[in-house]
Image (cartoon, rainbow, N blue to C red; front, side, top):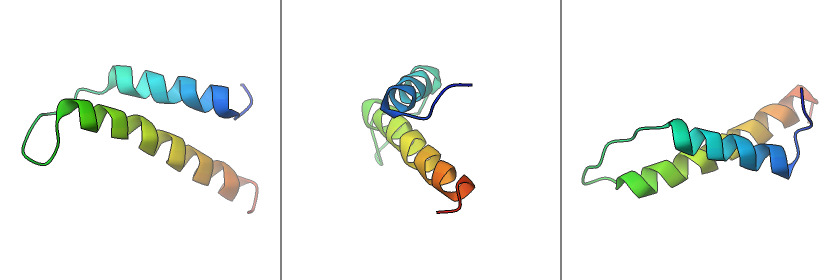
Amino acid sequence: GSRLDDAALTAAANACRAACRPIDDKRGTIAYRTQIAGVLLKRTTKIAAERAQGK
């Protein structure tokens, strides 16, 4: 395990972006969806960590 700090979140977000294969359609480009995947991973991971700590 590693600490849940900004570096770990950034590494996880980068891995998420590299792994995702979004589609391109009228609601969003591949670049946009790829970027958002990393953003959402960071947000949800922070929320999960806070909830696990009882915050």
